[in-house]
Length: 465
Image (cartoon, rainbow, N blue to C red; front, side, top):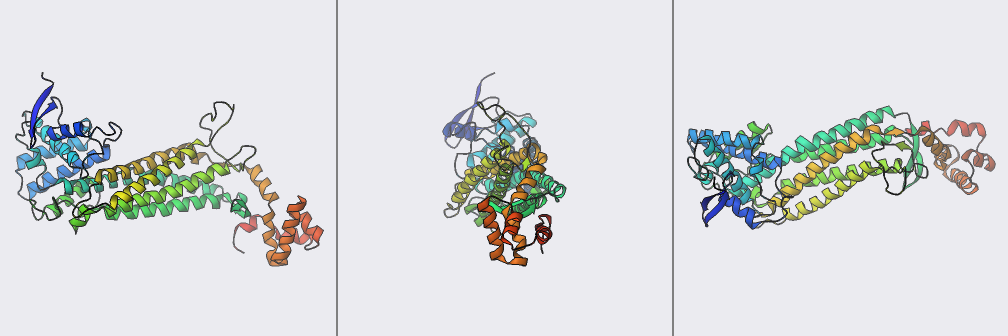
């Protein structure tokens, strides 16, 4: 067997590995863009999205009489192999290529065409009976296909990975909030002691942050459902059937299970990617919430002797190569590092989204890469944090009680009875004398022992009244 076959494109002959399903344009891209290989190759969601779009396009073209039924069936079968992940090795291209994603679109066209040729018993590279441009890409352009890939793969990653992982963490925190609703602990503002709260209220605040973030992320999906397909090169729909956009969107919705629709204005979706920019920004918002939660957890667990130490978290691994027995809050650290990465990714997406010129934005691949990396990193990090940290959070009852008993801010309960200024005198005297609030109050003669014991109750201070 020969190691290569000769394929031709508009620029001439190209040597392609004989066993590969890709063709001339994919091979040229491999040779012309040796940037970040193999680290920045497309992942499963993008390859699957190409399969869905090409299969839906074949169905739509057949329905509209634009493609012979026998050809459509071959393309549909070949595209199903792409959807199912059987041909992932045939998609070798990197993110940093032409800004419209043309090479990746042609990669999909060539792979599906050659797989269809195999199914028909033909010769790889012959373009018979299926041509990658005329048949697989019929009614399409890279300029409307790749924006559709951005939306389909983005929805897939967010709904299939990010949202389930965050929802699971939220459920964990919700159960912890209920379990520790009666654990009274010291509140803190400005990194200083404040009036009491319960551990359940603290964790419930974290859960509410995730509720809000989940709502924000889900809301971004609505802008990703419209698809640019049918706009072809510049948004006009040249060389596509007038009903292609609506028909292919309906087919994509049926295949994917998500409510994709034809975009009302394809010019906007091809020349700008505001929906992707918005989706990325919601992942940044989610990251901010996760940063707050992870930082709170590691501060509350700090110590174990000289820190706050009011909660304990699971010991995952030794924390030092020199200090025996040291255990670090590594899951918190990993999650906060991911949050920082997502912030950086979002900055790239936002800048790239501002760079559309006339009828095309040519920063599409890097925008998609950063959106998907954010969605996938968040899913992995949140799942790990949930399983290896959050589920093991427990209060250190003795430490919590000791800190509450020493808090000067319990004096706030005296405000309604003796006034703010007198209460402040008690707190300052206790602080300066290193005494307890009760002793300071009695020494100043501002309150009786009986009234102090009746009015200053940490548990009653965790609610209104």
